[in-house]
Image 1 (cartoon, helix red, strand yellow):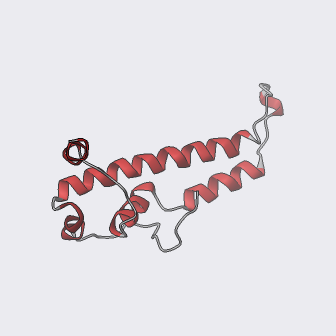
Image 2: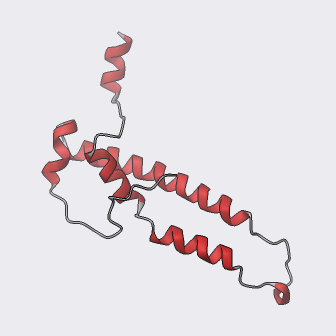
Image 3: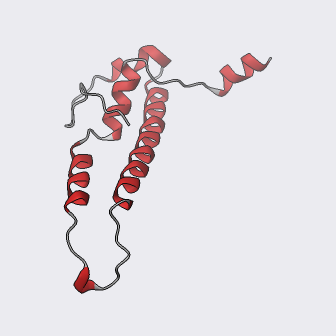
Length: 110
């Protein structure tokens, strides 16, 4: 997954009126952002688990378990990435999120 470089990894205070031009409703915008954040979170988690699985060992003996440097570095990299919520907000504000409502779907099908 390509991570945008202009997204802050820390919390930013937002003006709620910035979310209304696209949908006309703050609550609808927040619902769209939360669904997109959930999609991003699932994608990041699958990506991380896939990379960590490459270094997984099948040894169950505690004496043979050791720190895997690659796993630690990968985990640290993912910890430094912006949170999915921040990514979703930036995508929404930049107009990169596609969404449709049931009313729009009904109009298309009629």
